[in-house]
Amino acid sequence: MRKLAGWLLVGLVLLLGLAACGGDALPDTAVCNFTEQTAVTLNLNDENGDPLRLVRVRYRVDDGPWQETPEHVNGTAVLRDGPGTYQIQVDKPGYAPNEITVVVPAPDVGSCELVGETAVLPMSQAICPDLSLANLEIEIAAPNQDLEVTAFSPTGGFQELACADAACQTYTLPLSGLAELTLNVTELGGFGPMQVEDGIVRYQLYDSHLTLRQNSLERSVTVNGADSLSALLNITRDEVGCPLADLRTLAVEPQPDVASSEPFPRLSVEQQNDLMITDLGNEICDADPVPYPVWYEAILPAGTRVADVGVFTWQNERWEAADCALEDGRFMCEASLPNPFIGLPYIYKVVVGEEEEIGTSLPFDTLCLVFD
Image 1 (cartoon, rainbow, N blue to C red):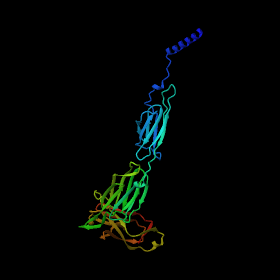
Image 2 (cartoon, rainbow, N blue to C red):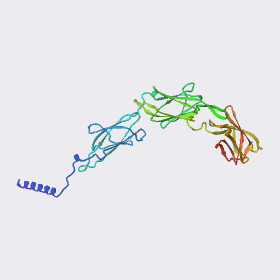
Image 3 (tube, rainbow, N blue to C red):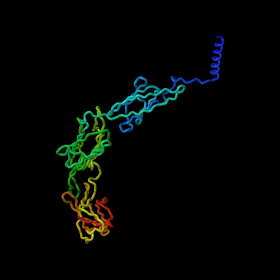
Image 4 (cartoon, rainbow, N blue to C red):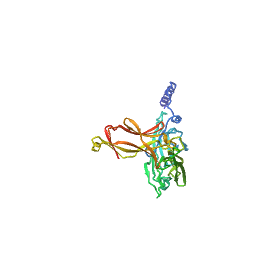
């Protein structure tokens, strides 16, 4: 018994000696500071695997109190509450809520180095309980009812809308997904035939009305003198998850915009004859050229002085003027060209003051043109 006590005394002395010689004590995990270490990296994605922003993230550790994430950037939430069992819940308007549990193990004995966990939490869009709620009604009252209405969104793609009534004033568009929607309407007929008063080109302008409705919401816009318009608005989600047209964001761009300083319509010239282009070997090009009347329509901006307008064709290595006159609201011009038109450059243009627009400028010196 006295020998055993002696050995115990020797062991105690050795331990005290090691401590006295500066031996390091092992760290206690309970006193580690994990506030600067990432415990959980949570990637929030939509149904396509793309990062999803503006997601509300709540979590708690080891059944502790719920708290909001301290960091949420570019679809990634970073949690720094040390080891433990993380219960995480996410929600976002228009998406089904989701949750995940992530276990972050304690560091190895003798270490304060935390090994973080990475998790991916996908979120899918909520399903609208009543598909009729997602319909956007489009009503267009315009002088010309021979309209073309198209819609484009990144989620729905490009589509041409069919009219939903006999008068072709109403169209229905089912909405899907969150996006910026663009509606395009052409052939509105916002201005009438050309008129000349005191030598100045004028046009009578007409109003067109665009009305958008969804459920009890409605927004109307009137454009004056427009031949076409583009309407942009954001598609969001309502409280039950149905796509909702945010009519407050509606922005309409008419073309032309008669309220701006831009000229309308744009200066241009268009050939009216049918034209066949063929190679010089075609037998129809063997005929002797004869003078032939070729017609052009000049589109002139409002406010143009008719005396300043000229339509020209390139003949005999110089510009030769065509004869022009206003006919039934159209500014028509006639030039006499050889038919067939063989091995010559074919160029015509309209000039107003110092501004000019080329109708075509093609060499055609190796081709044959036949007017009809």
